[in-house]
Length: 287
Image (cartoon, rainbow, N blue to C red; front, side):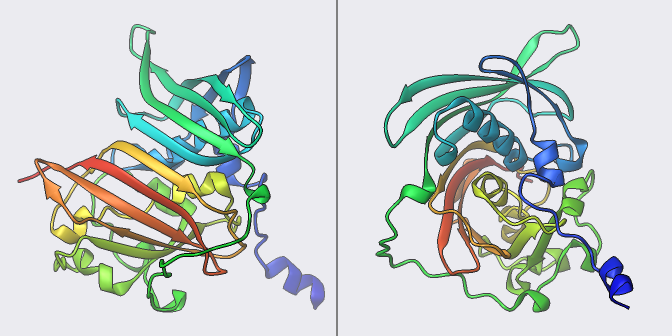
């Protein structure tokens, strides 16, 4: 019957009405000051995911600045964030006709109730829909198998100890060519590629792109390293509003030295457009 078929079809979340939106929502306390309870649902190993945190700060700046879309956002991760109460403080640095710039900090509280700064960001915002549609590029989407031929966390045991709550909120299907680490045979190439989306079916938007660039397993796994790879600095460039449908994320590392590595990410949408790019510096645990 039509009613039964309809009841059996999962309802896709929409932008503005999904777990991601609820968990990045802030409550304004005063102009430029917001309260939030960081959700434990976005933790990995022993800390809150950096991409989720960047989306929280990105949402606060979108509310503060006269422009709504992040064009470039650079974050320095100062101390590890934990689930629970936090405050975001924003400041408008400059406003213009096409771009506005602001800064924001996310803070939590120590055992004595003192504020501890977790992240500080500087960002420029604009209107993605107002950009010209002329594209001249040598970039190409990553060569990947179809989504149904890739593998997610549910296809094997968790390779890392600690929380993996974030994986329940994401649709990640990894390219088998970058899965050697999960089989005990890392390729040594420092590459990670995957189809990406939110588990509840919500389509991507500029804020969720801030999550997408930092949601895959670290490329350090394919280099043969294990454990937490904390982000020191992350810069994201949002290039276009993504089309509906799953994203493709490709991340590469070319150089590990002195206990630090870089990760360069590209995010491509279903229309084969490069919608976001990022670079981060991360610390690795050797030995």
